[in-house]
Image 1 (spheres, rainbow, N blue to C red):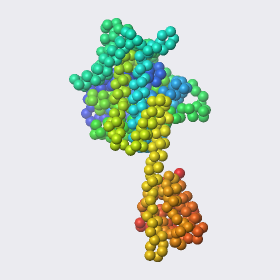
Image 2: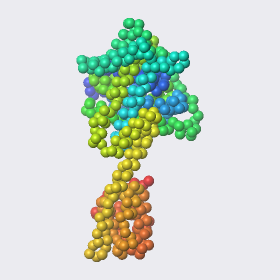
Image 3: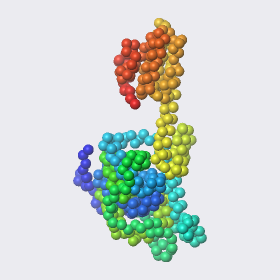
Image 4: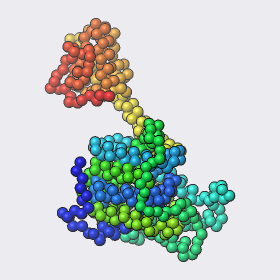
Length: 510
């Protein structure tokens, strides 16, 4: 695959002022989310900023299209919460790096299209569960430590915290009604920050959670055993993180394509994401993927080239190196308010409006995925179970479609015209269609309107052929594809095929 930087496209006019201002704006909007998501997952806050810098820089230079903004997104971070709690930070770094490897392989083998195989009900359940987790995590900010024990805030501290959170939410909701020139979350954080400093309000700050000051992201090899047991631990999380990241990324890429009337490169985006996540794993970042909100901010600010993403990333690095004293004074109430609004906007409210129009099995899958996500905080398990159940439901519904039209012609030959797919799920129903003992001496099975999808279907035909031969009767198979005829061990010499009318399809071998 050929790579080129394409930082500046000299074939079109680029407004560099817009690119620089858009980059600065994006950096300011990424910072609070990066810190909040890191704190949400129990990571050091600096990991969120490192992820924003690394993801943003690498994907801006090498990504699938200009205008796309990547960072430490909540969708990928939440996948790692369970791993963080059970095995610690070093395993998280390893899982992030492995997710990057998987994403690169997806891009190299051009498998990005298969990400779309995740059913929509699973995505609804995943996103809604994610939103609830983000919201519930904000309740932790209403707790404090008293005599070594966690306790809920009460009295004046509770009123201050609740008031500042409410003010943040109000600004985020109301400001866009007057102007969209500046990000409302950034304005909300600045207003609350100035209010707390100006009036000397005592409330929880980022410093109370962890120190933010740091240098350039340090190189670090995850301190874990390099064996098969470790791989078994991190692989499920890495696989789901890679899938979630690619899904979010490709959806965002398609959105930018539509908004800018241009076309990006999905496979290149997969490789860029993977490379950035590998660097995250070895440079103390929490990984991530393209961020829809920041991408929209970037585009609305007039950015159309890669420069804005680079400016945003370098700005975040400068904040890490020189702006820590200011960042550590940020009130947690402001970040909590922003994250509550992120949770509200993340939730797929449309799922409530269309629930009566969805098949019951899809509703069940969506609710189940959401409940598993919320109850276990294990998105990997939730998505896996959702995909498996959806696949089984599809197989069950497809199995019910197989039918047989039966009739005896003037010559006394019985015909079975098969309709619907023949595969592992429909084999039993297929076998029940035949009455070998009472059928005449000659039988024809016509597959003109059927598809033989796998080896289970082939084996069912093979056994049926043996049964008719055992009963001393002739069996002819019409309109069976060349692939199927090759695999039927006992069908040679008894297959009656009209080549011109044969459907053109291939057997999917398991």
